[in-house]
Length: 325
Image 1 (cartoon, rainbow, N blue to C red):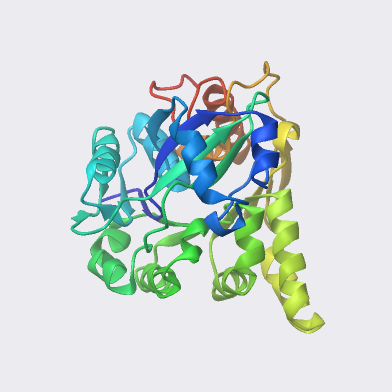
Image 2: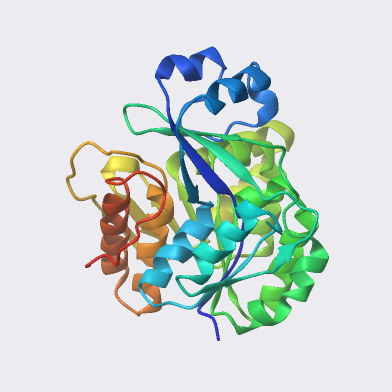
């Protein structure tokens, strides 16, 4: 039996150190996901990056979380599209080595590769290095029904809404069928602005927890308000209000909210980060480690902060040693 099953992307990150001027030159929004079509000149940017040194790491938001949970000896399974190419093989091996099982490699598919642009302040900005492959299809999810059924939690990574949304809703329905608890991550302001209606539908159908930062929740409500009448917006606000959620506030800490709790736990003081890649992913892993081991909510939030603090002290989104909590 798995403790966690997750629906997510399986990117291999190519980490480059760049200047703020580089981001400005190509119209890249700092600290966020940037689609290829939003880059001023994707061909020229690619050529310029090819002349730079880079570090390759398996990444992915929920995959990073599962990797760290593996360090804490939690069993998990990742449903993702993995290409049968060097990048896909590299990614799968990185997960299997830590005890996280994944779906099989797919012949004829190029694995997702992301250029992670790290500026001197440690902020990271993301641009797909190649056109995006599709995320798991409805059939892929159906093939993994036994994995979802066996898990205590299903995590739906918000980034997958950029692909086959039928697969996302199929995973949600299978989880409900088997009484697997569902956690939804909002992933990035860009994602909730682009797919506000789909996010709202998932929340409406019912999840057991939302994990997001303040900006993502605010952006979801704003984007939904732009295309729906006030009664629908109020219904979404109500759905969010009655859904247990963890809201992160950057350096200020994180708050857990449900019908009985409104608990803010501040961050631990830390030096200037080396690279903020994966901080939110590590936070979620630490928090879920606390929940899975049945610690109090306050302790789980402390674990989340501790894991995030360790990750921002290294280059890349994964910490390759077990963290002492």
